[in-house]
Image (cartoon, rainbow, N blue to C red):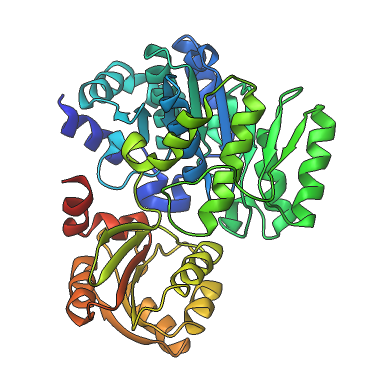
Length: 409
């Protein structure tokens, strides 16, 4: 079995959220606990920084990793989803897990995956723990998949927990109120271990502080302003930077400030981080951002409004399991030309549903059955003084080959 065959087996044999959405979601820790015990509990070898939140998780993980790397430490990351290659999920100092190691792990354990009834995410988390343990990383930065309390990554014993911004997302799994979702995210806080909090609303802070008191966990709040600059663009990245800075402080390790700053200034190249306000072209400026919920879209459009573009062209596509009421309400308040597109993954919102949302929101829009066609049309229509922004689902980005070529070569 080669890499292609192994990953095809994984995607086809094991229900996975990336392709199938909520039908593949398996909350609870019993399955992965049993499986990890059967392979020697590799997660227990790791010094883990565990990161949960609605928005900003990926940025915070990669900012922390970049700072650790430039200080001579070996930093591993587990994050999701991937855009172009499964191997993007697991990295050590910016180096993706090899196709050979992915293949070996699947071939060696596939019968046990079925025996224990593991979900796709549980398998990838176990693979990450194994790889990061084998690589003897100094720190493993682990991003939750969905939620926190019942997320497969919550089998870990972190030395630090981090909670980023919390908003309404995945409400069918985590609860339909902000406090309910906050309670799920706060489930990653562990006894007598510190926790770093981003800029949280009062109702979220109340929930998180109550949990931290129960677990006797020291709380670190972010500073009002970041200490260092970063190459990550967008005002919202300043909050993520402040969270990363506070996380490094909470680790209580001796890092060189100049090297730390160098890490924050080279996040993308050091950690192979892509898809968050990534500028891949000029005249017109082309920006790729995986903002997909109302909070993320609002932050993205707010950032775009700070530059005097003649016109803004928004290429957007999303999964069918999202509540898009607030997203399209946000779009309706921004004067732009919209290119609404379906993508090839089975979770894609249909072109008919996108057109209906566009009409209800009174947008100036065109609709496309293919993401690449929407992107090409936006580029054709844009003047050198305009901005083209591709946002929404990671699947939309993955369906546009020219973006992959521009960023990954």
